Image (cartoon, rainbow, N blue to C red):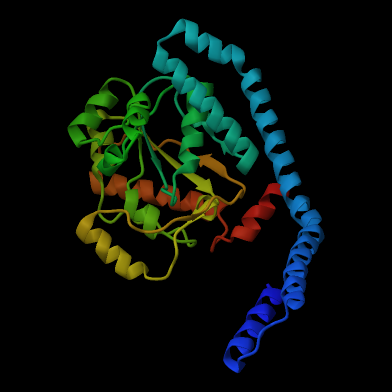
Length: 323
């Protein structure tokens, strides 16, 4: 503090000039320092409380809203608990939480939910944001309103993340080789895949280019199982969470060598999120896997073209909440 610096200066001068500060001056400086600190605390306390109290009130209000939504869904949760196993109830509870969180934080909406079949197999293909938060909301909606658990294909590194194994187990995630995926489809499940995977998540940008390379394993699965493919895209998903553009090429080279997701992610912005589920692409035996993969990519690019602002903008995506 200013008084303390002045005191140290006087002491330094006294030592170097061979002088001694009067005792009354030292006491006065200590007293001034104490009173100045008290005055600053008194001055800025209203400003601090002006920010702290509203934040606390908002947290309490949203906690109350969350409780009311879960209370509203109590019958659905009770039915899941008494009519099925423990994990079914746990899934419904988590799905309810994600649905409420999405509604509050992102004003989340979904269009085309009727394109998800109520029974029978299908392959759902979606664009992968930096963090697939939107897909958690999709899974929640499908579970709550279609009573279906989608089989999610994930990168194998997720199984090594501490604490993730039980979550992946409950939501029936799989690394998903082609034979395993065909088997799941043969059993009538919906298989959810983001062909871009971690590469698209970490190295995509606000221009929403699809980064699939030559991946067509999902198309092989759909052709072997003779099931439709459903294209999915969520508006503003790259504005909710982003990756920095600096050093991207070096980080991409590092990822290609190590397959470790070492790219920093930032965001959590409460932008408007809206998922668009396209019309299913029916099974066509005349198509090769590469042709079907290309057709699926075109379908998702069309959804992006129709519904996404290019380039994406965080501020405008926030304004979408009030439009």
